[in-house]
Structures are given as C-alpha cells and as structure tokens.
Length: 212
Image 1 (tube, rainbow, N blue to C red):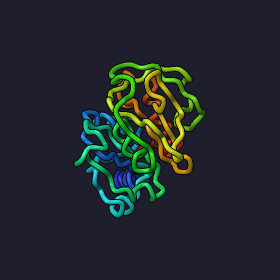
Image 2: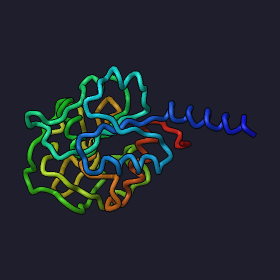
Image 3: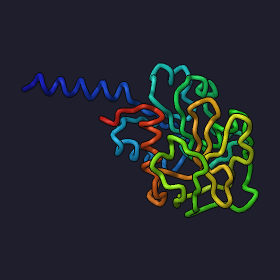
C-alpha cells in the first residue's frame, strides 16, 4: 500500500538524520573508499569540505566525524586545516593518517618527518591498550601504512593505544574526549581488521544504529 511506502521513506529519513557521519576531505585518494566502507556498515555519511565551519557542523549535528588522509604535511604553510572549534563540539572524531596528525597537532601534539623511514605497505600492528576502537581486534594484526610524517610527541592530551616497529603512535586516543587517531588506513582491504575498527568507531564510540 502507498501509505506503507511513505512510512518506510519517513523511517529511512529519520535514520539518516540521526545517524549521519561527516567525512572531512583533506585530499586523500581514499576519501570515497572511506565513505563506501561506512555505508557498507549501514551508516549514512556525507563527504564535506575540510574547512566546513564548526557552526555548520553543529547545525548538521552528526553522530561522528572522520578526518581523511591527505598528501600534504600539516606543518607546511597553506596545508589544509579544519576549524579548531570542531574539537569543542563534543562530537566523536576519528582522524586517519593526515587527519590524525591534524587532530593531534591542533590539540598539543608534535608532528614531523619520521625519525626512521617512510612507512609504505604492510606493517605489524600491536594493540597496547584495551579500547572500544579495538574491540574484537587481535592484539597482533597487519595494517596498511602510507606516510612520511607521523605524530612524534603525542603530548599530554593523547596516549598511544597501538604501535608498529617504526611508529610508536600508530593509534592514539585523547585523554578526555572521544577523539581517536590512526596512522594506518582502516578503509583498505590490506588492513586485516579495518572494517571492525570502523564498525567499533561508528557503533561503540558514536552510537550509530547501523540501520541505514
């Protein structure tokens, strides 16, 4: 019946309105892939400009925010930045690669060129702290790295929750806010448990229902 179709559309619209994830685009070649992975987990998302204002984000009222990677160095003049007021909205944030470096630098960490070697390809990740982000993920797993810079000093606000041989801050969490950073790429298939990490962020951290 026609009224049932309309009811289902209203229901779908309500899920989208309540479970939106915003993906901030910092120029990553994987931006669309991040969106695809989120949607595969039955969560509605939108890719938005990296400089979307905190006022606009507040008006959209997303359940969570994902910062994509990107080819720039966060400390270079003219490198894409976000509105720092976003971190004060109380909305969970997951920074991936460049996005992680941006969040950490904005909140007191130090970012620079790797003191070892540029990591590109598979790396062995060791989870060092039990976190909602790694629920159901083995302590040892393989992840995909693609970076020259990295968070060298997490500062007082962040603590490392996973490491690799060349990256002591392969994953971090803010001490008092729901802000996470991953130096590796959970959206690519080369990361063994990337979908689980994303699912944990969407459902356990952001509280998305996964019904879209």
